[in-house]
Image (cartoon, rainbow, N blue to C red):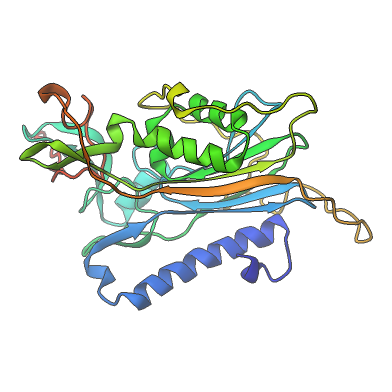
Length: 329
């Protein structure tokens, strides 16, 4: 991203560079795997560039990964990413259907609809990704949504993560952890651990072995702390056992000033300082990236809540699902 920006760190330049990164990643994936188009192998991606001189944050994301910014002066976080799940985005549903693919719920073993809307063929939550959705799917698009927002002057926490992070714990629990953890490393580690212990993060390894659980997805998050806490108010540590995450969260609404791809105001959000001005000192306190490696657990689970905790399975479930077809003409 820095290479494609070519020394121009404005918001418009970084957004343009981010789109080039996604295009390059798609091209390299196709070149490295000639048979990629015939299989379903894809991933989502989120990029974040922090320009302290201009006091801006630029993000580029595709798919269901999330990026948000929380500050001490605001009770609610600012959502920096755009969700591309067809369940939540009418624009994506229209685009997928225009490509010739179908958007429908999955059908359970009884033939009834269950779970969120998915992209068929394949049963994918999103078609905005890098890679391939499989043979016959024309909905795949590696183009990201990009945004540039002002960086508040007070202490700020930036969170980038896979969809599983905020699917498993409530956003308020995640923000409480970010603000109370003394470092980005501890915040990222505790977030991953809090997500990993949730029931929805795991599913049966096989249909015949009800005692074996394996993760449905990789859990990854990156945390960046910018600015220092006020004197006399040190951050307090928080143990994983103190978290009581909820199974689902309510999507956040983007704040005013957040510019997205194609917006008329996407040329920038702040005025650069004079050329003679000296660069400000770094405000970055700590940063860290944590990834939960897939492991198989053996825990006792009851028959009534053994598969998905009483809720329909996500698109990445280990079970085989098919699209629901209405009986009406």
